[in-house]
Length: 144
Image (cartoon, rainbow, N blue to C red; front, side, top):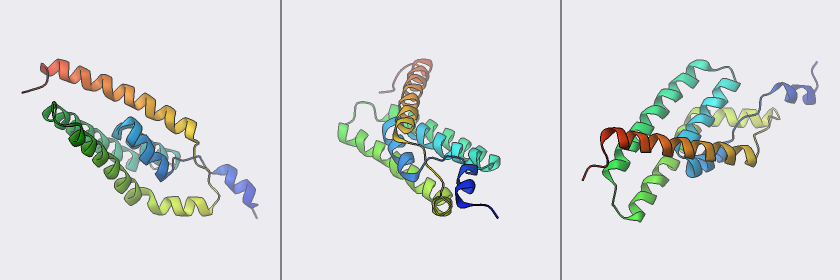
């Protein structure tokens, strides 16, 4: 029979639902998507990770197109759109991994700490910004 402490060491660290929400707020849907994908990969769910990767890429493309269309709009509109991506990430993460989080906690699993969450957020924010600028430059600027 396995002792509870031994079983905990066999569990991989995951990103919590709170971490996914914070990372999406700070680093865009790219950070939140990465965390959901990383959770699936840590648990050996490669097919689900692939589906989430495709979904994340689609949302990012939609977000970039929407951002180009909203250029010059009020700050409150942009904040609302940003909050929309956070809400979307939380709903999707909860739908896909909510039950898993409950059983994971019951088994004594550990979540990554705040430093890692903030680091992923910053990296994702930089990548997202650079990619957005490159896409805008390639398509010839923001349409009027």
